[in-house]
Length: 265
Image (cartoon, rainbow, N blue to C red; front, top):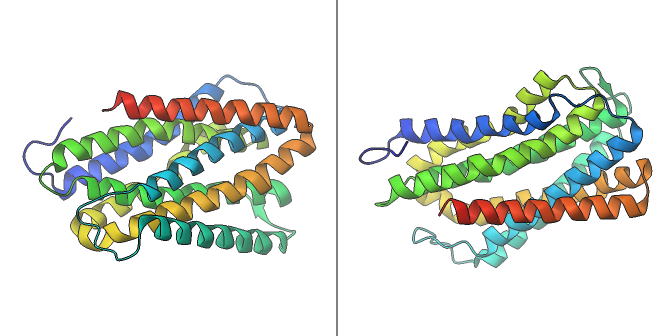
């Protein structure tokens, strides 16, 4: 539903929640899937890694090619995106070191390595939603806010479904109940409505930092995919299976992202 007249905070809040709730739909393909053994957990990690690498690439590309009349920064988008990516890599690396130092880590019924993996995925996907929330809020500003805001929100809502799928792939094989996985998927996108409102109200202040945020999310996501999920997938399966499955998953996610981009224009 396109806003009538100039968009308001209520429109931004509504569409922010629409995109957040769509993330939970990623759990639907698993509603009737039985429990998975160790091998299939490894396959699931490879699938999630491929999706996250594709998403990371898209975030970095979006940051580098970002253009907006309200962007008044003296630094290029390449510089800001690169800086954000480096900070994201360092931040997740330090977070991993911190989690590794706590062997008694627990998250509900999950313990140790499983709890660490779930926390990392949840953390990274939540951070990534911050930049998307800013994008939603900024898109509703300006004279074409009604049309652009609807376009961006719809794109993100559809895009969030495979992202929810990537989260669900990590959660469900680790015995997380399906309802909990559904809620946790939505939780990773909560920053979208929360960040959309201040970005809409103070768009001039937020826009210059968007490439940094996209780079940060892309760098963090790439680290977890390459150094956590792919490593664990190889341990639970083998190198060939991990390479093939993650490549197919990456290819599928890239096709999906291109389809969303073309379909929502």
